[in-house]
Image (cartoon, rainbow over all chains, first blue to last red; front, top):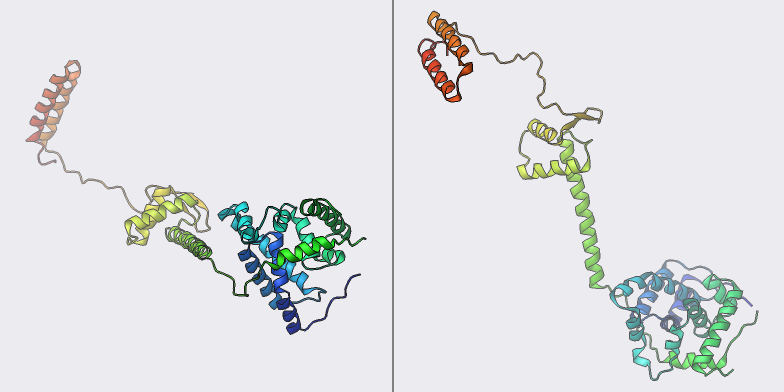
Length: 161
Length: 176
């Protein structure tokens, strides 16, 4: 069931964006951004949020998608200066307690699988909302989520259902 | 559409991401590398435009706005080397000689003529001095002597030339 777009005032919109900052930051880290890149990308997204706000059902979803685009735009620069592997290592080094780590396993998924899983499990979006935000077909979201869930189950939970 | 949701995965996500602490929101870091890169890009672009404008300006001043880029650069280099303090006409002349062409008033390339034609000017003529009878006679004699030189060796020829010069020196002094 799709939620109706919220008709927020500018102040309410900004408050909603501010409130979703920690959640969207974690979502960006889960997608693969380093802490610095996640903060920068979110700052870009907030600048966009200050300029405009559309009638969106989920400000956190909107912020995530805009920040993701900003992060992808700037990623090539980091690829020049630092190898991607080191980048990923930097992002997760503070919290890698053991071999099996959720973020490490997420990094092994495709970009779309990561985005779908993060939208579902970190932002708490429904499949319909995820499809709308990522601009892909709901069926594709369902299939992608199914494949990615199976892979994560296999790797993190040893394949038990 | 089945909205598949795994509660155990959800718990793993929650537990793992709770350890990721978001930093306080601050203005975006401005990397010094980015600043240096941007400054360099601006300087290079500005310098390029200024150089192109200077080269075109110099070519225009030389009346060679229609010429190709390399020639324009060559003209610019020459103008820089020479200090650009010459008269405009002289500079135009030099520049046109350099590239071997000039521009017509409607901007078309015209081959440059090395010696400009000045209307109403006459070729320089030396005023002739009338020869004395002694000089004429000496000239006649010199011609006869020269006619007999066809069978001479090189050394004999040189000796004969010297004798003729000495012979003509005195009577033809006034004619020179």
